[in-house]
Image 1 (cartoon, rainbow, N blue to C red):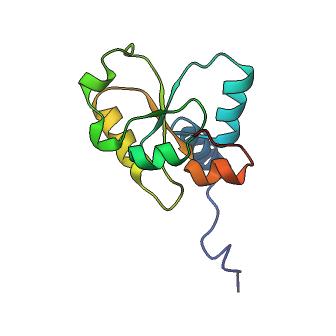
Image 2 (cartoon, one colour; image 1 turned 180 degrees about the horizontal axis):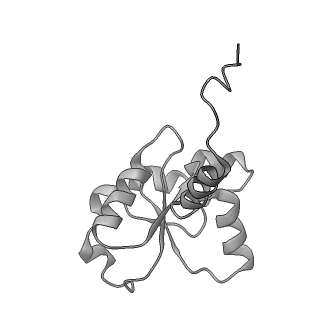
Length: 130
């Protein structure tokens, strides 16, 4: 009998390649954000979509606070239409970043999620800004 890992067969290499390549179009990780902000031109806007109180208690350095409920065309009007927004919330247990990404996509804005959120950032050993 196959292990619990192999009871459902793995996808073909072709399908796995398409799947994992597609995921990279939707997400980035904490280490990539850290590296880009320290060693490259910052060509994205990092949005902390949590409440202002949680943001004030600690956030990823350089992130702007725009709670999901506040995302609107008016709030984004000062950004060029092709601006990439990278969203994060508390962590894997929070779907706030997903909700924010939906709103941004509905507004026709490019968007990625920083997987892991604030929890992932801290787990990587990166500091917070207060």
